[in-house]
Amino acid sequence: MIRYGPALLSILVSLGAIAGYVAFLRVPTVRNHPELYLVAFALATLIAAAASWRAARWPNLVALALSAVLLVLGGYFNFVLARVPATATALKVGEPAPDFTLPDATGTPISLASFRDRTPVVLVFYRGYW
Image (cartoon, rainbow, N blue to C red; front, side, top):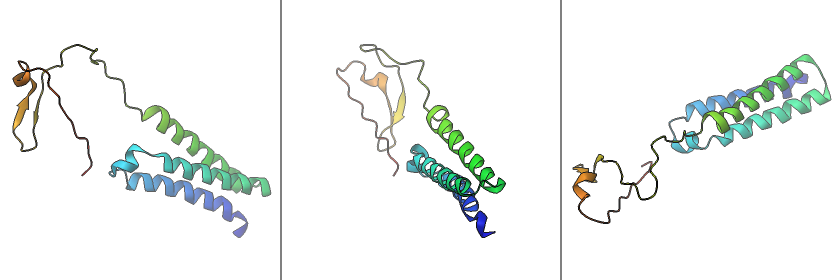
């Protein structure tokens, strides 16, 4: 069993990367920057490649194939599927902003229409995770 230790380790690292990403999916930093699990998949692929190079037995080759597939799928998910789509309603420079209503810091609803007669209007949106 110890001869297949690196193959088992590479599979455990890959499964640990998936479990860690799913477990911390609610943490915005992990959700918005999932590069760490790609590093784990790459590490697992390197471990499995070293094991396969030392002894080309089927458990090592299966671990290499599994780790490589997870690395490719993780990269595809991270760089293709997880991108924010472009908005179809993007405004051009100089166009008036569409009307919207949002609560202010005290919870009172404020509408952009109430500021139409004043120029200029500066709106600050705080995007935070607190």
